Amino acid sequence: MSEQRRAIVVGAGIGGLAAAIGLRRVGWDVVVYEQTVAPRPVGAGISLWSNARRALAWLGVDDAVGAHGVTRPGGGVRTSSGRWLSDSVGGNLLTSEEVSLVMVHRADLHAALLAALPAEVVRFDSAVEKIEESATEVTVRLVAPNASRTATADVLVAADGVWSGCRSQLWPSAFRPRYAGFTAWRGVTDGSFPLATQSQTMGPAAEFGLVQLLDGRVYWFATGNDPEGARTSDERDEVLARFGSWHSPIRAVIEATSPAAVLRHDIYRLTRPYPSFVCDRVVLLGDAAHAMLPNLGQGGCLALEDAVTLAHALDSSADVPSGLRAYDAARRPRTQTVAAMSDQTAKLAQLRHPLLTTLRAAAIRATPASVVIKTLRRATDWHPPS
Ligand SMILES: Cc1cc2nc3c(=O)[nH]c(=O)nc-3n(C[C@H](O)[C@H](O)[C@H](O)COP(=O)(O)OP(=O)(O)OC[C@H]3O[C@@H](n4cnc5c(N)ncnc54)[C@H](O)[C@@H]3O)c2cc1C
Image (cartoon, rainbow, N blue to C red; front, side, top):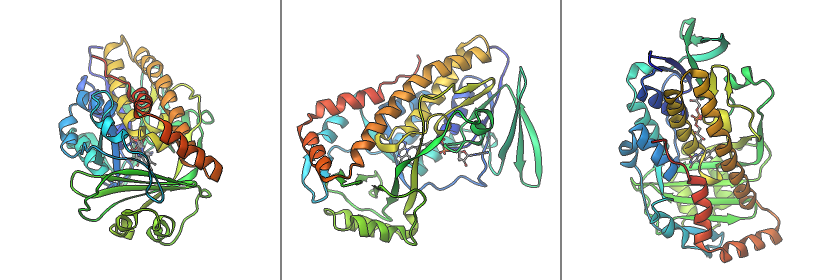
């Protein structure tokens, strides 16, 4: 496509910012509209698997993010009393070229993506309200401070998250977020907290993860099978009550996190099979397209893959509709596969019955690290187009 094309991106999350970087890289003129008044400080860690690192390298922001990452051997699965069920996966993983993992603070990832865009590209305090499509362009109505106005482009990238308003307008009944049956707490210690080893600890209908960040702080996450919408007045107290008697240093890590820094989110996923990610000139990307369970740590990684694939498909196709079709054909099977794998992992993690948790422990003990790595290789097996 020779003449300069224009794209509107809705949402300045990981997916929207990456899409803007990718489209600009192939010569598009891009504006990102974000409803929040300023970049939101996002207070948790995020795993960037090798597929995400490859996408970030293609986007040209790998160094900026890698500088904040930690590649630290060690770690595995434990019981709540601290007994190791498997302690070899972490070391093997992190020495594998194909399946590696870097853990960064989300705020650092967002900052690196934002810094890769000229300031005028991302317009905060601008909510996209209504979309209208014609055969050749797409127009949005924006609600911005003191004004409501319209903007027009060749393509609209809907990267507005699991509760995507763009999706519900154009695909009114095709996608449906469904509560997964569990809630997740996340936190980062206020200051440095050296960990002897990282771990994922499994109990009945609950798990607790400990990961060291490069700056010395600890990122932790916990889950519980709770009714949708349940909340307490102090979520840190709630986490302490549930996990404070688990093995060391879980209690100390929770206590080293300010109550205000503890996040709680109910977990939702979109049901599969996904219908098309494309409706004329509007394309879904990231959680808006394929929100999945967080158990493999792949939702954000796949949003980065989406961004690269979209930019490449639009750049290498004769026209916009065929570029969008190529994106859809590439992304739906891949995201569906990883979402199904995440569902399986979540099912195991959230088992409640004592007999089933005993069987799970035996299965984890009996599974060689090579088998786990083979599964992870499948999840991370994506390479950017050359
Ligand atoms: C507990 C938990 C742990 C996770 N851990 C990991 C992990 O370790 N690794 C990983 O890869 N993934 C992880 N994920 C998944 C990851 O967080 C998501 O997949 C990722 O953040 C999705 O990014 P996104 O840009 O698609 O959507 P979002 O981050 O939801 O961004 C959407 C943006 O759109 C904006 N928006 C919405 N509507 C409008 C509108 N009308 N107009 C303008 N702007 C709008 C929103 O304000 C928001 O900024 C985890 C998820 C959870 C819940």
